[in-house]
Amino acid sequence: MGGVGASLVIGICEIVAVGAGVGVEVVAFDPLLSSDFEHPRAANARSPLKSLACHAYEFENACTDRMKLIDRYVGKEILLTASMAVAVLSLVLVLGNVFKQLFDLLVNHNVPLDYILAFIGYIIPFSLTFTIPWGFLTSVLLVFGKLSAENELIALRATGVSIPRVCYSLFALAAICCGICFWINVAVAPAAQQKMKEALFNIATSNPIAMFTSDQVIDDFPDTKIYVGSKNGPNLQNLLMYKTGKSGDPLEVVYARSGSLEVDKSNMQVLLKLINAQIEQRDENHSSDFTRIQQGIVAQNIVLPISLEDLYNRAKSKRSASTMTLNELITNLKEQPQGKQGKVDAGALSALRTEINKRYSFSLASLAFAIIGVPLGITAHRRETSVGFLFSIVVAFVYFFFIIIADSLKNNPHAHSDLLIWLPNVLFITLGTYLFVRLARR
Image (cartoon, rainbow, N blue to C red; front, side, top):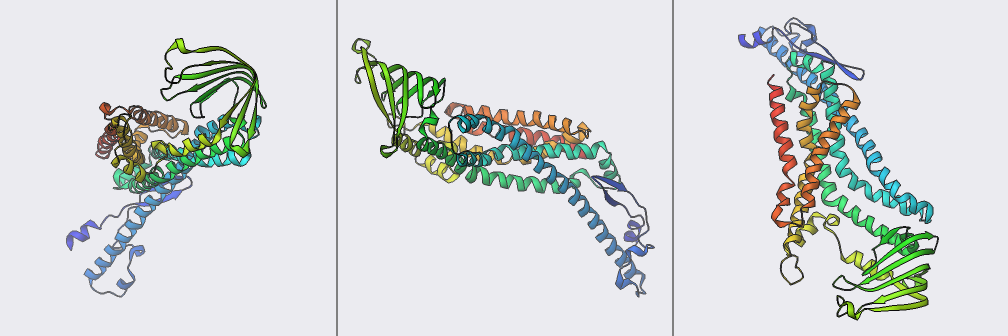
């Protein structure tokens, strides 16, 4: 017990949260003489050993309370800063682009406002897969940069509180963010993307004229591509339409200086009425034989129906990997997608494997950012928000750059993109762990 008494001669650390920062006040005291640490049951105790044990009990509880205070402060600052960063990033970087792209549809084509709001609602889960890790990285850099700039970490370490101990609440929040991102990646975001595509096709079926825009190629209709030079309401100018066959070669080319659009909702089709149309046709069985081309066909007035039902059926039958849930991806991978000649499509298999690994890898981005963000924020030793945000842009750009490169190679089975997708996590966690350990040993 003599060793215990000697270890309790000098107590440490009373941490007081002051305003927006953390003020650290180190108080030296003798727990054996201080009335603040006297256990109630020790008031009438006559044994010195019992009294010493009670003092040790109170001192241990006091230190535990003060460590909880540190955890609450750091956790609160990280949570609040991350929430604001995610909101700002989602609004500026994602929703701003969405409004920019849909503004023409809303103003010029009389698309109902509820479709626009639904489209925005569907794009938010997809944006959160990027903005949650990025916002969490921003909060780590800002909070620990501020703690370092105001010498609060030095004060904590002087009282015996290590850097890893300060980060307990940080890593707990990082684990929670990883769980949320995993849930969004495997279930919420794919379903939202599918709903978003369906919403676009609902716009097409409710107001098909909105799909035709000036100086754009419309390739949403099956086996048909239409170019419109200019548009004024339902009236079109300088139209060029291609109808392609199974081989992809054009079978019919139609050009007209003017025309108009009319919706036939009862038959689920758009009627393209052309005036003075010039038509060129090819033999369907010999589309590449230019000697079989029929030229010089002129029509004063011609009506070309474009089926919306085929458009909707094609949209429902063909789903990209990004719109599939994790279970659907695994099921498709087990079914071994077939190519044109009945052989296993190696490119499709590689794309499915890459998408599955991407869902898991991308979910760990918050943890990777937490590990590398702490040493970067402390080393920067800056409290300015602009500096921390600039650091987050650089780090996030490097991370997402690797993801984009790996995703662009997903159809190439020789590139092993399903393994490359893990490279940014391995790189950031390894480098961050090295910097973190070196910082903790200072």
